[in-house]
Length: 98
Image (cartoon, rainbow, N blue to C red; front, side):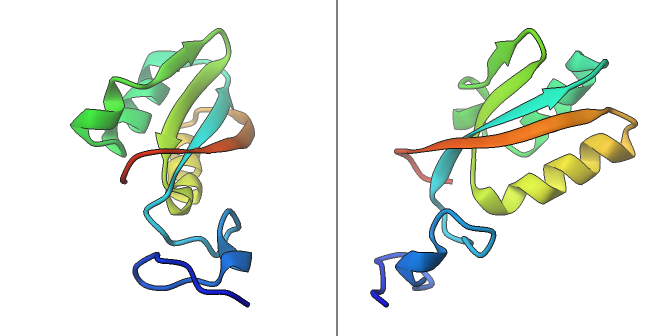
């Protein structure tokens, strides 16, 4: 296995997996039920000021740029707020720091 330049170092086989604790950003789609404004506020609470402006609002959810390790925490928070999560899709790695 080959190491990356990530800090701390990770094996390349872990990048883009649930074991990815790098600062890499990914486009992630959260499809949700009702309470879209509350859901957006929850998503914004995980984003720094520089990433909030990149939220893409879609008819049934939002696309955000996040580090993968935030995904379970965001889903948990949405569910805790009684917001239905119908799917979560990771799309592509994007440039920029978490």
